[in-house]
Amino acid sequence: MRWIITAGVCALVGSVSYAQQDPQFTQYMFDRLSVNPAVAGGTGNICATALMRQQWTGFDGAPKTGLINLQGPINKINSGLGLSVYFDKLGQEKSTIARLHYAYHFKVGSQSTFSAGIYAGMSGRALDGRWIAIDPVTDDNAIPTSGKSASGFDLGAGLYYKSPKMWLGISSTQLPETELSDVSIKNKRHYYVQAGYDWAMGGNNKYTLQPSILLKSDASSTQLDIGALFLYDDMLWIGASYRTEDAIAPMIGYQHKFPKGDSMLRLGYSYDVTTSELKNYSSGSHEVMLSYCFKIVKPVVNEIYHHPRFL
Image 1 (cartoon, rainbow, N blue to C red):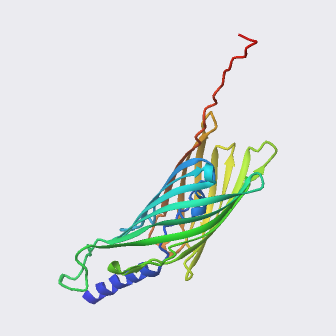
Image 2: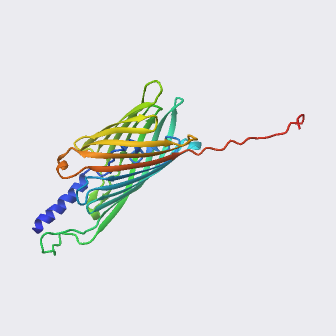
């Protein structure tokens, strides 16, 4: 029995070592920054976005993922800054990834922008060492009995184009492929292509269809997300997303523009209906998105001066 447990541990580490490692989100259209630094500051607003995901409900040790994005423009130098922090737990593995983004924006015509960006950060992984052995003999040296952790340098780059109607980005993360030898994990380089379009329907612009795609690959496996949101009156949306060989996910959300028009609050929810073999064991995945954006508007100063002819 001991060799079976050891083989299982090795298989787990091996699968972690070479599988896609960047966390995934069904509501990817609201998270363009974490995988593409060129997005930073592109909207002209200061934005904070949080995503929480509980994957494969019903599994012990199923993935739990959190993401926080902060970004904003630096208008004086046509640039943007951003910060992304991931928290991910999968069984006995915990991951923490922090990335600081910088983007430079080039004006294309009167309303479009082309951006180039880079991020630098740290990627940390930890194994807690609490293995449960069915065999009553527990003195097998091949089974780790204490936690291990390691961290390493992370670097990525991307390009991004945005117009009033569409957006398109290409990027890569984990460029150095840093090896974390203490936990037997090597960070894999990832590649992303993302795009979306806003299609106004009807003469009063009350209805907007927003199709989007996200292609992600680590050069050994590739996955495609295809989604579409139907936005009503710039306030409510419903939609769905399909992830190849994994899940179909209905989505619903609400956004509120504050009266002055310089800030917006968004709240979204998605539920993944598993289509792979895991559907026999999992009741699906839940994901919540919360976002708040605002713009710093300088108050208008009325200047008063006296003319010698008019007192």
